[in-house]
Length: 192
Image (cartoon, rainbow, N blue to C red; front, side, top):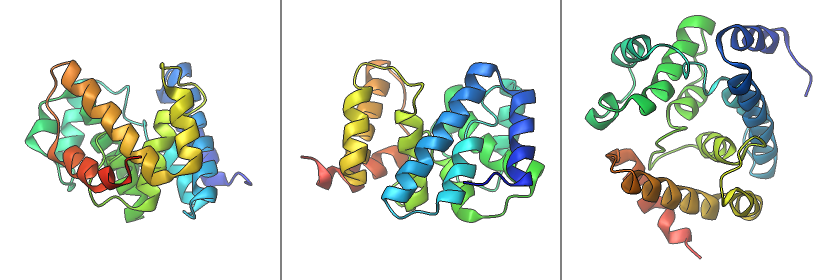
């Protein structure tokens, strides 16, 4: 993929506003997103951009993230407004519109849903959700199995990813947004 001037602008912003580790993660997610997009017939340019920018707001102070969440025109549940780890996806979807005038709805929603998922996600949103989970820098216990699943079936990988996410949230005693449960119900039919 030939790097456009605009991608260079995005990368410069991310290098200046994210830690080296988070910037590397963003590059890895972009690369994983392109591979998944090509395999599952999503737009690879949009996948690269959304993957690159998905964590743009991750390291902003909590107050700034929450202000972006509250000022966004995106659907935001009460559960999400009470959970700091969930702010960054919504804040990021808002921030890319403000900073870079990104108006592509598919990319905005892919960034917005990359943490909690939703029952009506686009193919691009599925790609970003999974790319974030399987990127090269991830090293959790079952990441190898998740990568293999993502290579075989996007839907089965989404089902397993959501089972993992919900189980992890329950284990930590966290609330679960309704959108996550709706996504789980959509993909459970793909369970092995």
